[in-house]
Length: 385
Ligand SMILES: Cc1ncc(COP(=O)(O)O)c(C=O)c1O
Image (tube, rainbow, N blue to C red):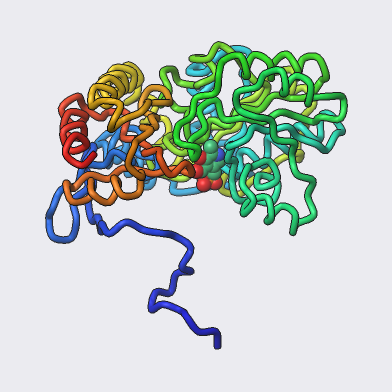
């Protein structure tokens, strides 16, 4: 037997923070001892409507009681309703939806379609981009550790271009390129928002060569960055766009959105998923979209995000060097190491994220995060920085 195993039956793959929640309520987690924790991490940007929003919980309960599950072998009205609502929230010409279960799976399908439609193999992606843990998504992700996984699977790695060099992107995309994949705001990189010129160049390069443009909005979509899709807030629309994390406020579901031009090439049996578009996650996603609209949560993400940005910058350049990102996906570039600040904030009962950049603290709270909650976070930051 191998040595070094812990007592847990779970594989030891996650570095975990020392908080054990048993309940959630809006922006707050309540632990075993009844202590309250302010969640500016949002369960990794998933708790879009806050923890346990009553309308989302009620929709899940009602759907579970009427039909817990049926696979994609039968049509379900709720699946159609969700697809229609997603298209109504998204910019044209995105008109068609394929529902799956996770961010990586949505990206995997987007890459698959780009290869299938172009008959080409190679992708161009952006330095610092992160797209998932399946073999194909690792091949377009940046970082030696991730690319090694794709190499072991024998997949060709994407060509990575610098995040701030539109000219390099224009010259790298050619007639061999199946697609360009990018996160408009790079989550793991510390909410680094790409220059709009890079997105414009990506659109231009794809139009010129027939490659497909893929936006991975798994983390930055669903209202987090100023519009329902980040694409809309940047004013550049891709051929394929993926959404996940916040889409159902915590139930696993993801969506691949595409255009009539792409869907004209797709026929029955080309894609598939047993669980994709299951009725309970669909109900949670429909309720999430309704709450985003009714409670104006995208506007809230913008205004509270701006309040946090200004407040963080006002702490002074000896503490906060810069703030990157959009809406409520923000990266605070600090003088102190982000991990140390994350640990100190736990003493204030506040949970925040870090990033692959050791100086950048990542904030991705529920889109319902209030100004008072933001104020509390800023006060704690002022003390620990
Ligand atoms: C931008 C981005 N793409 C893809 C993924 C993968 O999503 P999942 O973990 O749901 O497979 C993530 C997850 O963090 C992500 O942030």
